[in-house]
Amino acid sequence: MQQDPNKKTVLDPFGTSIIADYERLYKEFGIEPFKPFLSKVPNPSLYMRRGVVFGHRDFKRILNAMKKHEEFAVLSGIKPSGEFHLGTLMTAKEIIYFQQRGAQTFYCIADIESYEDNKVPFEKSEKIAVDNVADLLALGLDPKHAYIYRQSKESHVKDLAIVFGRAATLATMKAIYGERNIGLYLAALIQAGDILLPQLEEFGGPKPTVIPVGVDQDPHIRFTRDLAQIFYKKYGFILPSSTYHKLMKGLDGSPKMSKRLMNYFTLHDKPEVIAQRISNAFTGGRATIKEQRELGGVPEICPVYEVCMFHFVEDDEEIIKVYNDCKTGKLLCGEHKKQTIDIVTKFIKEHQRKKKQFIDKAKEILNVE
Ligand code: SF4
Image (tube, rainbow, N blue to C red; front, side, top):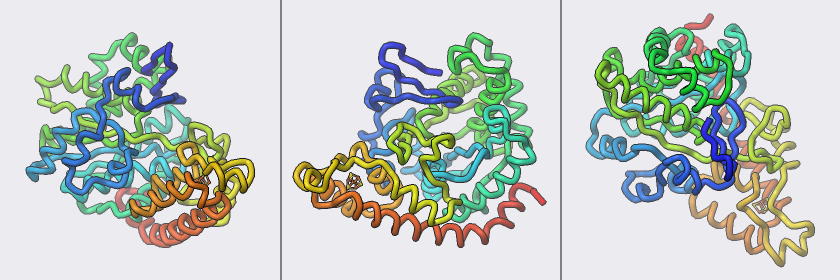
Protein backbone atom coordinates (compact mmCIF):
# COMPACT_ATOMS: atom_id res chain seq x y z
CA MET A 1 0.00 0.00 0.00
CA GLN A 2 1.45 3.36 -1.03
CA GLN A 3 0.53 6.11 1.36
CA ASP A 4 1.42 9.66 2.12
CA PRO A 5 0.27 10.23 5.72
CA ASN A 6 0.14 14.02 5.34
CA LYS A 7 -1.85 14.22 2.17
CA LYS A 8 -3.90 11.07 2.64
CA THR A 9 -3.33 9.67 -0.83
CA VAL A 10 -3.74 5.90 -0.74
CA LEU A 11 -3.28 3.43 -3.60
CA ASP A 12 -4.43 0.05 -2.35
CA PRO A 13 -5.28 -2.71 -4.85
CA PHE A 14 -6.80 -4.84 -2.07
CA GLY A 15 -8.77 -2.13 -0.29
CA THR A 16 -9.99 1.44 -0.62
CA SER A 17 -7.90 3.93 -2.54
CA ILE A 18 -8.10 7.62 -1.73
CA ILE A 19 -7.12 10.05 -4.46
CA ALA A 20 -7.88 13.66 -3.62
CA ASP A 21 -5.93 15.03 -6.56
CA TYR A 22 -4.55 13.06 -9.51
CA GLU A 23 -1.84 15.68 -10.08
CA ARG A 24 -0.28 14.70 -6.74
CA LEU A 25 0.36 11.18 -7.96
CA TYR A 26 3.05 12.45 -10.30
CA LYS A 27 5.11 13.85 -7.47
CA GLU A 28 4.20 11.44 -4.71
CA PHE A 29 4.39 8.12 -6.57
CA GLY A 30 6.56 8.89 -9.59
CA ILE A 31 3.78 8.26 -12.09
CA GLU A 32 4.45 10.27 -15.25
CA PRO A 33 1.79 12.45 -16.92
CA PHE A 34 0.33 11.00 -20.11
CA LYS A 35 -0.58 14.34 -21.70
CA PRO A 36 2.85 15.03 -23.28
CA PHE A 37 2.45 11.79 -25.28
CA LEU A 38 -0.98 12.52 -26.60
CA SER A 39 0.05 14.24 -29.83
CA LYS A 40 2.52 11.42 -30.55
CA VAL A 41 0.06 8.53 -30.21
CA PRO A 42 -1.40 7.51 -33.56
CA ASN A 43 -5.21 7.43 -33.15
CA PRO A 44 -5.32 7.92 -29.39
CA SER A 45 -8.21 6.21 -27.62
CA LEU A 46 -11.18 8.10 -26.21
CA TYR A 47 -9.73 7.68 -22.71
CA MET A 48 -6.39 9.14 -23.79
CA ARG A 49 -8.01 12.08 -25.62
CA ARG A 50 -10.19 12.96 -22.64
CA GLY A 51 -7.53 12.66 -19.94
CA VAL A 52 -9.17 9.58 -18.38
CA VAL A 53 -5.82 7.90 -19.05
CA PHE A 54 -3.79 10.47 -17.14
CA GLY A 55 -0.54 8.72 -16.26
CA HIS A 56 1.94 6.03 -17.21
CA ARG A 57 5.23 4.36 -16.52
CA ASP A 58 7.62 3.86 -19.47
CA PHE A 59 4.93 4.26 -22.12
CA LYS A 60 7.57 5.58 -24.56
CA ARG A 61 8.73 2.01 -25.10
CA ILE A 62 5.23 1.01 -26.22
CA LEU A 63 4.83 4.08 -28.38
CA ASN A 64 8.10 3.28 -30.19
CA ALA A 65 7.02 -0.32 -30.76
CA MET A 66 3.65 0.84 -32.11
CA LYS A 67 5.25 3.37 -34.44
CA LYS A 68 7.90 0.99 -35.77
CA HIS A 69 5.45 -1.91 -35.98
CA GLU A 70 7.66 -3.92 -33.64
CA GLU A 71 6.54 -6.71 -31.37
CA PHE A 72 4.86 -5.68 -28.10
CA ALA A 73 2.24 -7.13 -25.77
CA VAL A 74 -0.71 -5.95 -23.72
CA LEU A 75 -1.94 -7.67 -20.57
CA SER A 76 -4.70 -6.87 -18.16
CA GLY A 77 -7.60 -8.76 -16.72
CA ILE A 78 -10.50 -9.06 -14.37
CA LYS A 79 -11.11 -10.44 -10.91
CA PRO A 80 -14.05 -12.85 -11.37
CA SER A 81 -15.99 -11.77 -8.31
CA GLY A 82 -18.94 -10.23 -10.15
CA GLU A 83 -20.32 -8.98 -13.44
CA PHE A 84 -18.65 -6.47 -15.73
CA HIS A 85 -19.24 -2.94 -14.44
CA LEU A 86 -18.09 0.37 -15.85
CA GLY A 87 -14.65 0.03 -14.25
CA THR A 88 -13.86 -3.35 -15.79
CA LEU A 89 -15.38 -2.10 -19.04
CA MET A 90 -12.60 0.49 -19.17
CA THR A 91 -9.83 -2.10 -18.91
CA ALA A 92 -11.52 -4.26 -21.54
CA LYS A 93 -11.74 -1.37 -24.00
CA GLU A 94 -8.09 -0.50 -23.38
CA ILE A 95 -7.00 -4.08 -24.09
CA ILE A 96 -9.04 -4.08 -27.30
CA TYR A 97 -7.49 -0.74 -28.30
CA PHE A 98 -3.95 -2.15 -28.05
CA GLN A 99 -4.95 -5.45 -29.69
CA GLN A 100 -6.23 -3.52 -32.69
CA ARG A 101 -2.84 -1.79 -32.86
CA GLY A 102 -0.94 -5.03 -33.16
CA ALA A 103 -0.24 -6.04 -29.54
CA GLN A 104 0.07 -9.69 -28.58
CA THR A 105 -2.90 -9.84 -26.26
CA PHE A 106 -3.18 -11.49 -22.85
CA TYR A 107 -6.27 -11.42 -20.66
CA CYS A 108 -6.01 -12.81 -17.16
CA ILE A 109 -8.92 -14.10 -15.11
CA ALA A 110 -7.56 -13.42 -11.63
CA ASP A 111 -9.44 -16.21 -9.86
CA ILE A 112 -6.73 -16.76 -7.25
CA GLU A 113 -6.99 -13.11 -6.25
CA SER A 114 -10.77 -13.40 -6.23
CA TYR A 115 -10.45 -16.39 -3.89
CA GLU A 116 -7.95 -14.71 -1.55
CA ASP A 117 -9.39 -11.20 -1.59
CA ASN A 118 -13.15 -11.75 -2.03
CA LYS A 119 -13.43 -15.33 -0.71
CA VAL A 120 -15.12 -16.45 -3.94
CA PRO A 121 -14.81 -20.26 -4.25
CA PHE A 122 -13.27 -21.50 -7.51
CA GLU A 123 -16.47 -23.32 -8.57
CA LYS A 124 -18.30 -20.02 -8.38
CA SER A 125 -15.62 -17.86 -9.99
CA GLU A 126 -15.50 -20.33 -12.89
CA LYS A 127 -19.12 -19.48 -13.74
CA ILE A 128 -18.51 -15.77 -13.29
CA ALA A 129 -15.43 -16.02 -15.52
CA VAL A 130 -17.49 -17.50 -18.38
CA ASP A 131 -19.82 -14.53 -18.13
CA ASN A 132 -16.90 -12.07 -17.98
CA VAL A 133 -15.22 -13.57 -21.05
CA ALA A 134 -18.51 -13.49 -22.99
CA ASP A 135 -18.69 -9.76 -22.16
CA LEU A 136 -15.16 -9.25 -23.36
CA LEU A 137 -15.83 -11.00 -26.68
CA ALA A 138 -19.09 -9.09 -27.18
CA LEU A 139 -17.13 -5.86 -26.69
CA GLY A 140 -14.90 -6.81 -29.60
CA LEU A 141 -11.81 -8.65 -28.34
CA ASP A 142 -10.63 -11.04 -31.04
CA PRO A 143 -10.15 -14.43 -29.32
CA LYS A 144 -8.15 -15.83 -32.23
CA HIS A 145 -5.38 -13.39 -31.40
CA ALA A 146 -5.52 -13.43 -27.62
CA TYR A 147 -4.42 -15.66 -24.79
CA ILE A 148 -7.21 -15.72 -22.20
CA TYR A 149 -6.47 -17.77 -19.09
CA ARG A 150 -7.36 -18.40 -15.47
CA GLN A 151 -4.56 -17.95 -12.93
CA SER A 152 -5.48 -21.19 -11.18
CA LYS A 153 -5.01 -23.16 -14.41
CA GLU A 154 -1.88 -21.42 -15.72
CA SER A 155 1.19 -23.12 -14.29
CA HIS A 156 3.64 -20.53 -15.68
CA VAL A 157 2.29 -17.74 -13.48
CA LYS A 158 2.30 -19.98 -10.42
CA ASP A 159 5.87 -21.10 -11.20
CA LEU A 160 6.95 -17.47 -11.54
CA ALA A 161 5.32 -16.68 -8.19
CA ILE A 162 7.39 -19.42 -6.56
CA VAL A 163 10.59 -17.97 -8.03
CA PHE A 164 9.65 -14.38 -7.14
CA GLY A 165 8.86 -15.45 -3.57
CA ARG A 166 12.59 -15.88 -3.01
CA ALA A 167 13.12 -12.13 -3.46
CA ALA A 168 10.14 -10.92 -1.43
CA THR A 169 10.55 -10.58 2.32
CA LEU A 170 7.63 -10.10 4.67
CA ALA A 171 8.88 -6.56 5.31
CA THR A 172 8.74 -5.76 1.57
CA MET A 173 5.21 -7.11 1.24
CA LYS A 174 4.05 -5.16 4.29
CA ALA A 175 5.63 -1.97 2.99
CA ILE A 176 3.84 -2.32 -0.36
CA TYR A 177 0.51 -3.86 0.60
CA GLY A 178 0.14 -3.21 4.31
CA GLU A 179 -0.53 -5.91 6.89
CA ARG A 180 -2.44 -8.65 4.99
CA ASN A 181 -2.89 -12.37 5.18
CA ILE A 182 -0.31 -14.50 3.40
CA GLY A 183 -2.89 -15.46 0.75
CA LEU A 184 -3.02 -11.87 -0.50
CA TYR A 185 0.76 -11.65 -0.61
CA LEU A 186 0.67 -14.87 -2.63
CA ALA A 187 -1.94 -13.33 -4.95
CA ALA A 188 0.39 -10.33 -5.42
CA LEU A 189 3.27 -12.63 -6.39
CA ILE A 190 0.99 -14.39 -8.86
CA GLN A 191 -0.05 -11.03 -10.33
CA ALA A 192 3.62 -10.30 -10.89
CA GLY A 193 3.74 -13.62 -12.73
CA ASP A 194 0.78 -12.50 -14.87
CA ILE A 195 2.43 -9.21 -15.77
CA LEU A 196 5.65 -10.89 -16.86
CA LEU A 197 4.03 -13.93 -18.51
CA PRO A 198 4.11 -12.42 -22.05
CA GLN A 199 7.92 -12.19 -21.79
CA LEU A 200 8.60 -15.87 -21.11
CA GLU A 201 10.29 -17.89 -23.85
CA GLU A 202 7.08 -19.93 -24.23
CA PHE A 203 5.33 -16.73 -25.34
CA GLY A 204 8.07 -15.40 -27.60
CA GLY A 205 10.54 -14.03 -25.02
CA PRO A 206 11.23 -10.55 -23.66
CA LYS A 207 9.26 -7.74 -25.27
CA PRO A 208 7.77 -4.37 -24.33
CA THR A 209 4.51 -5.03 -22.48
CA VAL A 210 1.89 -2.50 -21.50
CA ILE A 211 -0.46 -3.05 -18.57
CA PRO A 212 -3.50 -0.73 -18.77
CA VAL A 213 -5.08 -0.49 -15.31
CA GLY A 214 -6.87 1.73 -12.84
CA VAL A 215 -4.33 3.71 -10.83
CA ASP A 216 -5.21 1.79 -7.64
CA GLN A 217 -3.29 -1.13 -9.18
CA ASP A 218 0.00 0.79 -9.29
CA PRO A 219 1.51 -1.04 -6.28
CA HIS A 220 1.40 -4.28 -8.35
CA ILE A 221 3.18 -2.54 -11.23
CA ARG A 222 5.92 -1.11 -9.01
CA PHE A 223 6.44 -4.43 -7.25
CA THR A 224 6.64 -6.28 -10.58
CA ARG A 225 9.06 -3.78 -12.07
CA ASP A 226 11.35 -4.36 -9.08
CA LEU A 227 11.10 -8.13 -9.57
CA ALA A 228 11.78 -7.78 -13.31
CA GLN A 229 15.03 -6.03 -12.43
CA ILE A 230 16.02 -8.57 -9.78
CA PHE A 231 15.41 -11.49 -12.17
CA TYR A 232 16.78 -9.81 -15.29
CA LYS A 233 19.75 -12.19 -15.54
CA LYS A 234 17.54 -15.26 -15.40
CA TYR A 235 14.77 -14.15 -17.77
CA GLY A 236 16.00 -11.00 -19.59
CA PHE A 237 12.79 -9.17 -18.67
CA ILE A 238 12.14 -5.70 -20.08
CA LEU A 239 10.56 -3.49 -17.41
CA PRO A 240 6.80 -3.63 -17.98
CA SER A 241 5.10 -0.35 -18.94
CA SER A 242 1.72 0.80 -17.68
CA THR A 243 -1.03 3.28 -18.38
CA TYR A 244 -3.31 4.49 -15.59
CA HIS A 245 -6.91 5.50 -15.88
CA LYS A 246 -8.88 7.50 -13.35
CA LEU A 247 -11.32 5.65 -11.12
CA MET A 248 -15.03 6.18 -11.65
CA LYS A 249 -17.21 7.65 -8.92
CA GLY A 250 -20.34 5.94 -7.63
CA LEU A 251 -23.68 7.16 -8.99
CA ASP A 252 -24.40 8.55 -5.52
CA GLY A 253 -21.36 10.83 -5.85
CA SER A 254 -19.17 8.83 -3.47
CA PRO A 255 -15.57 8.42 -4.60
CA LYS A 256 -15.87 4.72 -5.44
CA MET A 257 -18.36 2.27 -6.91
CA SER A 258 -19.37 -0.06 -4.10
CA LYS A 259 -21.37 -3.28 -3.98
CA ARG A 260 -22.51 -2.45 -0.49
CA LEU A 261 -23.96 0.91 -1.57
CA MET A 262 -25.25 -0.43 -4.92
CA ASN A 263 -24.22 2.87 -6.44
CA TYR A 264 -23.36 1.60 -9.91
CA PHE A 265 -24.71 -0.72 -12.59
CA THR A 266 -23.31 -3.67 -14.47
CA LEU A 267 -23.56 -4.74 -18.11
CA HIS A 268 -25.70 -7.60 -16.84
CA ASP A 269 -28.41 -5.51 -15.15
CA LYS A 270 -31.88 -5.16 -16.61
CA PRO A 271 -32.34 -1.91 -18.57
CA GLU A 272 -35.15 -0.87 -16.15
CA VAL A 273 -32.79 -1.27 -13.17
CA ILE A 274 -30.13 0.81 -14.89
CA ALA A 275 -32.69 3.48 -15.80
CA GLN A 276 -33.77 3.64 -12.16
CA ARG A 277 -30.20 3.96 -10.87
CA ILE A 278 -29.39 6.78 -13.31
CA SER A 279 -32.68 8.46 -12.46
CA ASN A 280 -31.78 8.43 -8.77
CA ALA A 281 -28.16 9.48 -9.31
CA PHE A 282 -26.54 12.41 -7.56
CA THR A 283 -25.74 15.27 -9.96
CA GLY A 284 -23.79 18.49 -10.07
CA GLY A 285 -27.08 20.36 -10.52
CA ARG A 286 -28.42 23.24 -8.40
CA ALA A 287 -31.26 23.19 -5.90
CA THR A 288 -33.78 24.82 -8.24
CA ILE A 289 -34.28 25.14 -11.99
CA LYS A 290 -34.03 28.92 -11.66
CA GLU A 291 -30.64 28.65 -9.94
CA GLN A 292 -29.38 26.17 -12.49
CA ARG A 293 -30.43 28.40 -15.40
CA GLU A 294 -28.60 31.31 -13.76
CA LEU A 295 -25.50 29.62 -12.36
CA GLY A 296 -25.15 26.49 -14.49
CA GLY A 297 -24.35 23.00 -13.19
CA VAL A 298 -21.05 21.51 -12.03
CA PRO A 299 -20.19 18.64 -14.41
CA GLU A 300 -16.81 18.15 -12.72
CA ILE A 301 -18.49 16.54 -9.71
CA CYS A 302 -21.37 14.91 -11.59
CA PRO A 303 -21.44 11.09 -11.98
CA VAL A 304 -24.02 11.35 -14.79
CA TYR A 305 -21.58 13.48 -16.77
CA GLU A 306 -18.84 10.99 -15.93
CA VAL A 307 -20.88 8.04 -17.25
CA CYS A 308 -21.34 9.92 -20.53
CA MET A 309 -17.77 11.21 -20.76
CA PHE A 310 -16.04 7.93 -19.85
CA HIS A 311 -18.22 5.60 -21.88
CA PHE A 312 -21.35 6.51 -23.71
CA VAL A 313 -20.82 9.71 -25.71
CA GLU A 314 -18.18 8.81 -28.26
CA ASP A 315 -18.15 12.02 -30.25
CA ASP A 316 -15.74 14.56 -28.72
CA GLU A 317 -17.70 17.56 -29.98
CA GLU A 318 -20.88 16.18 -28.50
CA ILE A 319 -19.37 15.72 -25.04
CA ILE A 320 -17.90 19.24 -25.17
CA LYS A 321 -21.40 20.51 -25.99
CA VAL A 322 -22.86 18.62 -23.00
CA TYR A 323 -20.19 20.15 -20.75
CA ASN A 324 -20.78 23.68 -22.04
CA ASP A 325 -24.57 23.37 -21.97
CA CYS A 326 -24.38 22.18 -18.37
CA LYS A 327 -22.00 24.97 -17.33
CA THR A 328 -24.18 27.66 -18.90
CA GLY A 329 -27.45 26.34 -17.50
CA LYS A 330 -28.84 25.43 -20.91
CA LEU A 331 -29.06 21.75 -20.02
CA LEU A 332 -31.03 20.68 -16.96
CA CYS A 333 -30.41 17.52 -14.97
CA GLY A 334 -33.80 15.88 -15.60
CA GLU A 335 -33.43 16.28 -19.35
CA HIS A 336 -29.82 15.10 -19.28
CA LYS A 337 -30.64 12.06 -17.19
CA LYS A 338 -33.32 11.06 -19.71
CA GLN A 339 -30.85 11.40 -22.61
CA THR A 340 -28.27 9.36 -20.68
CA ILE A 341 -30.79 6.61 -19.86
CA ASP A 342 -31.68 6.35 -23.58
CA ILE A 343 -28.05 6.04 -24.69
CA VAL A 344 -27.05 3.61 -21.93
CA THR A 345 -30.06 1.29 -22.17
CA LYS A 346 -29.73 1.15 -25.98
CA PHE A 347 -26.11 0.06 -25.57
CA ILE A 348 -26.96 -2.45 -22.83
CA LYS A 349 -29.75 -4.14 -24.82
CA GLU A 350 -27.49 -4.52 -27.84
CA HIS A 351 -24.59 -5.73 -25.69
CA GLN A 352 -26.71 -8.34 -23.89
CA ARG A 353 -28.01 -9.59 -27.25
CA LYS A 354 -24.46 -9.98 -28.61
CA LYS A 355 -23.14 -11.50 -25.40
CA LYS A 356 -25.56 -14.45 -25.51
CA GLN A 357 -23.90 -15.54 -28.74
CA PHE A 358 -20.50 -15.73 -27.05
CA ILE A 359 -21.31 -17.88 -24.01
CA ASP A 360 -20.35 -21.15 -25.72
CA LYS A 361 -17.16 -19.63 -27.07
CA ALA A 362 -16.29 -18.37 -23.57
CA LYS A 363 -16.80 -21.88 -22.15
CA GLU A 364 -14.59 -23.32 -24.86
CA ILE A 365 -11.81 -20.79 -24.17
CA LEU A 366 -11.90 -21.48 -20.43
CA ASN A 367 -12.38 -25.20 -20.93
CA VAL A 368 -15.55 -25.24 -18.84
CA GLU A 369 -18.48 -27.67 -19.32
S1 SF4 B 1 -26.93 18.85 -16.45
FE1 SF4 B 1 -26.08 16.82 -16.64
S2 SF4 B 1 -23.88 17.07 -16.38
FE2 SF4 B 1 -24.86 18.93 -15.63
S3 SF4 B 1 -25.08 18.60 -13.43
FE3 SF4 B 1 -27.00 17.97 -14.40
S4 SF4 B 1 -26.80 15.78 -14.79
FE4 SF4 B 1 -24.77 16.60 -14.38
